[in-house]
Every structure is written in C-alpha cells, then in structure tokens.
Length: 426
Image (tube, rainbow, N blue to C red):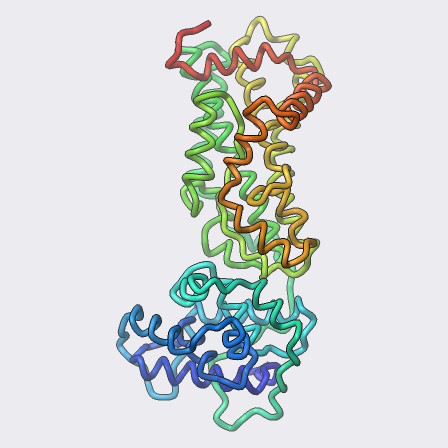
C-alpha cells in the first residue's frame, strides 16, 4: 500500500512484529494489543526507550496481554489484516506525528495512537501503568527522531494505508438525527403547547416542558463538542453515535443526564453535564481543541439567548396574564441555561472553562491538576453553595445578567414551583 515510506524503520519492524504476535496468539486480525506487543518487542524504537525510562518492564505488558486476550480462530499465514481498531490507532498515530510537526511516523507516535483509543485492552494496560500522552511527549522532547524507512522491502505489509491529506467534512457526512432526539423534541413541543393553552394539569405539563427542554439543551451542548471534534479530526465521535443527538449514546449518562436532572428536581440549579469522550490528540491544533471545549458552552449560550429574547423584547410580559404558567416555565429554563453556562465556564478541571485553556498550559502543571479532576463537583459545592466571596460574586453576576435581560426572578421561582409538581403549590 502507499505511504509506507512515511514509517520509520523501527515502526515498520514493530508492525511486522505485531503481525507475528497476532499469528502466534492465533488471532484472525491484528488488534491494538498486538501493536503494543510489537512495540515492546522492537527494542531499538523510541517507544521501548520511553517505557524503559518509565520503569515499565516489557514482560509485564506481555503477561497482562496474554492473560487477558481471547484466543481467535486464526488467519492465513502472512495475510492477516489490520482490524478496524488497529487501523484507527495508526491513523491517530499519523495525526500525532503531523500535529507535532514530524515528517515520519515512529514507534513513539504509535504509542500515542494506542492511548488515543480511550478503551480496549491495550489502552487499559497503558492507563493502568499510569502512562499518559503527556508523560510520553515529555520523554520525546529529549529523544532524537527515529531513522526513516530507507526503502520498502519486497515483503511489504499489504494492509496499512496512512492518511496523507485532510478533507474538511461537510454536513452530508454527518449521521442522521436520532429518532430518540426527534421524539424528545416532539414531546417537549406538545407539552409546551398544552402549557400555553392551559390544557390538562398545568404543573404536569410544565414539568414535561422544562424536563424536555433541559434534555434538549444538554444534547445540543454535547453535540457542539462532538461536531467540532469531528471537523477537527476525531472521527471516533461518529462511530460512538455522538453526532446523532441521541442522549442514550452518551458514555456517561449518569454525569450528563441523571445528575443534572436530580439537581434540577431538587433545587432548580442548572449543572453542566459531562457526556462525550473526545480524543483531543486527534484534533489538529491547540486552537481547534479550545474551540471544541468552547462549542458546548456556545450551544448552551445560544439556548439561553433564544429563551431570553421574549423577556428582553417584552413579548412575554405582554402575554403573561393569559399564559402565566408557560412563561414561568420559559423563565425557569432560561435561568437554568444561564447558570449552566457560567458554571461550565469556570476554569476548574473537568469543566469546559478549563478545557478551553488546557492546551496552552504547561505539561507539568496539567499532570498535577488532572489528579484533582474527579473533585470538580466538590469544588463547585464548596465555592458556590456556601457563603463565600466566590459564590456571592457568581450569583450576583447571574442576577445582573437576568436583570439586563429583563427577566423577573419571581417568574423563575414560580416556574420552579410548577416544575416540582410533587410539592405543595406556594
């Protein structure tokens, strides 16, 4: 296949060794775990040197893979194909090489490509050994580049094609919107109409309207992240179903849907969700990575703007006595979007505000900060749900924004009371 001359000598040998490992383990295809075995066997490559510098024994990796791997049916000798996941690893590795400004693809880039998968046996082993892209790149800075492949051997591997150019995707490349999302939109629209017309129980229709509107906004938020990541180079988001707007496809439904809805039900607070796994190393520049992180809040801000327009223009107040429950629900949704937007823009690890600046921060600083990423919600509670200068400043800012938008906070309170239909009406 074309473009094999972009491999370094060590990377080419590692791929040959990966084929050998797949045959030895009776696999029908070359999988990412075989690529990892090939990298540790190719002792002259930078990947092996990096693992040695990190005090990782090759035998440890080999034993973990052989203990976990499932025996396959085997393949024809010398004609094993790269499995789709292994092809994706090599494509990610090629992206890493281009992003770093390297003309050839070496074993160190293949190691980065394995970490770009975010799942699978090879990733789990490397992640369990506390090997991260940042630690690899820190080691790479002091290493010379591997020697390029001088000439293509006559027994060239017939299964590898490396991407040479990048084509910006068009809208026709995007998957079809999920029927689940369409159904949520239809139910939300119907609930809004029933609330506006005061048909059925107004508290129940308000509940459905706000609940559906909030889920729609969460889907749009995560779609914003995913579509920019897709255009930036991370094609895996399409395979994971993130571009269909289907909330059931989110890999962290607890964080992205359940927890925000629980807080919404308990106190009318718009917490940001955390739904999609993006491979930032596949995105082609620091600027695109920042834009990917900002795309979610941009979508949330757009939702907030649309909801605030009737209050800013006075349209809601001209109609409020006839359709009080409907406009109170809109006010609550607008409040939720504004709070979620500014929550998410806080520069705290795990939130989009931190993701926007993350690509421009020193690697050593990020290593320290990421250890505390799981404490995001605890930090939010400590800073914003206690009487602290940060919380006072934050809620004062929210109040001023709502004041500028001509949104009466008393309507938000009524909307929350309508939404919580299980409580007595105040």
